[in-house]
Image 1 (cartoon, one colour):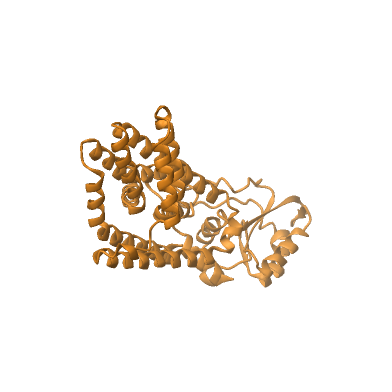
Image 2 (tube, rainbow, N blue to C red):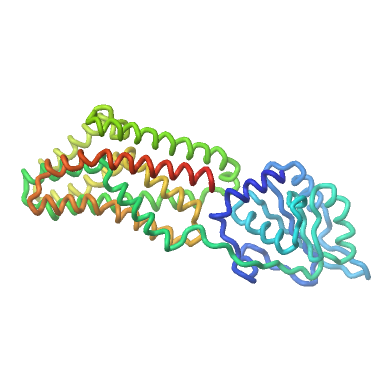
Length: 388
């Protein structure tokens, strides 16, 4: 169990917020100075921890200490596999100067010291309580670690968004729309920007939903499968890296039929039919149709364009100690950056640049895009290996 605790500490140090310096952490319950107080740390699926919890739960609600004084007994449990448990036990380890060999669960802290391990707790808890060593308890306080997510990291997230915005999957759909708009209507700028804005809103809403869902996941359940998730993240990142490297080689050889990371043919045909249907519809409702088209196409494109976005959301979930507003700002920063390349394409078409010429330019730059994607997914795999 000690090895599990140390491993969990190593992979979680970036994203678990610590309490403010010299302040009682918000999740620590208040305790009276005259009470006898025990703080017990346990771990999920720990047989010895279950035995200690059963032992402590059978203690009376009042303890008679030396001198005949009866004091209420407060017992607080923290699970180190949960979000608040790990920073709390690290705080106690440092404050009580617990040597490495005693840094295991179960462990019980009291005012004058601690008892570590099943045998020590079973043998020593009675004397600790009867002697009054558990009275006058105060919570330790240490300086908080640096937040995992900071404002200075937003430029990197912005750059990731730019890379996501030049994905050939989304650019090809946009250029098809612009070419049809150019033939059907002279309103390329307002209609094109409506489409871009619709996609940005869709991606932002989806990102916020996924981020919020990740935050409300049961932390204990998440921790119990965190090793599996880590392996999946690393494997998928390496797979996408390899696929983009293969696409880079095929793009250099102009073998575009062998490109792997792209929308399925059936979905491309569906999007083409949907775009044509909207363009050929009632001109009075064209802008509304374009807006709804952006939402529909975004949902389908996410299969191809969403890998970088999903990796970014996962990073925000793992590093979210800067607070919810900062994470939301990061998602907005990503979606805004991802919207700039298509917005530039709209502007160029409005200025007279042909969609076909832009498509040819994107085709020529595909090797650069693919190698950049491969490098980014290799980085994601490395970060997941080191810090997940």
